[in-house]
Length: 187
Image 1 (cartoon, rainbow, N blue to C red):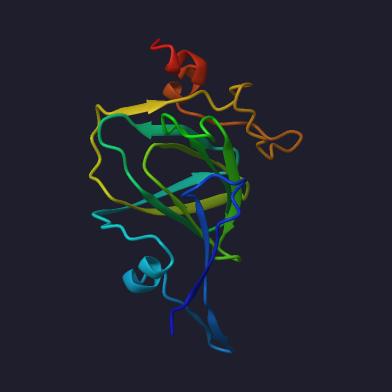
Image 2: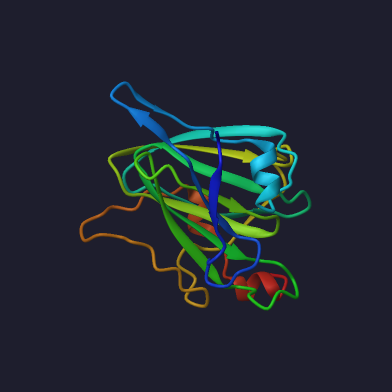
């Protein structure tokens, strides 16, 4: 029990993985393993997760695009209630896909998970009326170590699924991040 399927077709960005767990259901409901070290290691995700986080947000909340500067984290993210569009941007210096992005729909229905390696910027947009988002990370949170890129940087060109009339709700800091070009130029 507990096998997973892993898609590595993430716009050819190495390291990103979309995981679909096996779900066993009947008339009572369902059962699934959300994480099994052996299955994930077999799929090339051999990490030591040290912290679990959970957030709740309402429709239109956009969080990101965030990354850690000196203490980068691998992340394994999933949605347990509602639906979000989750995005990762390659920030690895020297990567042939630097600045490229990939997005995936995560929901309580599809039960997919998204593995985001160290040195990627990460963000998500809540599409349902309410969503609960869970993620495992490989380093502890360091409050003074967060960096970011503006969510609508034209050089990156994330195609957020913003519907007509959707009001975006962001933190003050998420409105103030600079572009990837400014980041690369040290501003």
